[in-house]
Amino acid sequence: MNQETENQAGESGATMDPDQPEAVLSESVNPAQNVEPSVTEPDDALPQVSYEDLPETWRQAMARAGWMSLMPVQSRAMPYIMAGRDVMVQSRTGSGKTGAFVLPILERINPRLEACQALVLVPTRELAVQVSKDAHTLAGERGIRVTAVYGGVRYGPQLEAFRQGAHLVVGTPGRILDHLLRRSLTLEHVQLLVFDEADRLLSMGFYPDMREVQRYLPENRRVEGYMFSATFPPNVQRLARLFLHEPGFLGLSSDNVHVVETEHVYYVAPAMDKDRSLVRIIEVENPDNAIIFCNTKARVHYVTVVLQRFGYDADELSADLSQQAREQVLNRVRQGALRFLVATDVA
Image (cartoon, rainbow, N blue to C red; front, side, top):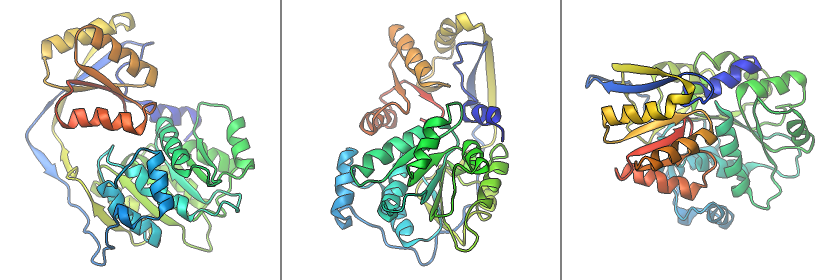
């Protein structure tokens, strides 16, 4: 994937681009649904871990992030990563997946070895920034270097991070492959490979680069692989086995229900008229609640302010928010207490 393609794939599908005519989507969902066949959970499943079982260093790391207990995905997935068993983990977005793999990764990194020891692949730059920020917070003063690698920015800071011996690299496939081809990044010492938002990473847009990145992994030993995703449709399950070794499966949500008949309606509006057009659509459709996607964090904030000034109950969700602030917004969504959520596509 070239650089232009990577940037487009990472931020496509947004509905609030300030520089071009807008296509605002509304959806009418047909009740007909298809339940995807799911893989089975392992017979030799590992026991869950509780907060009380965690080492003191882990508890301190969680305290820095404002976490006072383990989420279900963390309790179930952490033992597999510590045991080195490949696994696919199905869990909703916002359920604590990042902590589920970052904490065990940090525990297994050797700070004295100044080389990339863990690679986390993500589909977008915003997710790369978000995951790396969480990892920085959890790492604290342990001497573990974390860096985010993605396209659309200068190479200099990324090259310097590699020269300093970044231990944990979080990046998009296109830019990671670019560094591998330039030989500015080596995966010689990588022990763990994580696929965050695996269903998107294994789509046709990313798949060729994913296979190319795989070629740079060590050939003389197995690299552990872990996939996290809100959905694992059959094609993703099939492709996952090309990257994982006899993976187990942990299902922590009912997100395997996939809507197959959705009517898409779009409205084209001039760039200068998008705000009024959005408000008019809301007035006509009068939804009980809705999610409005934007392609940048700045646009998310702008649209939220616009809706609030029109008297609507709206709040924003983006990678700029702290974990605590994100949880507060998501709790309002879960409780049905928020009418309009304005968000980036990977918030």
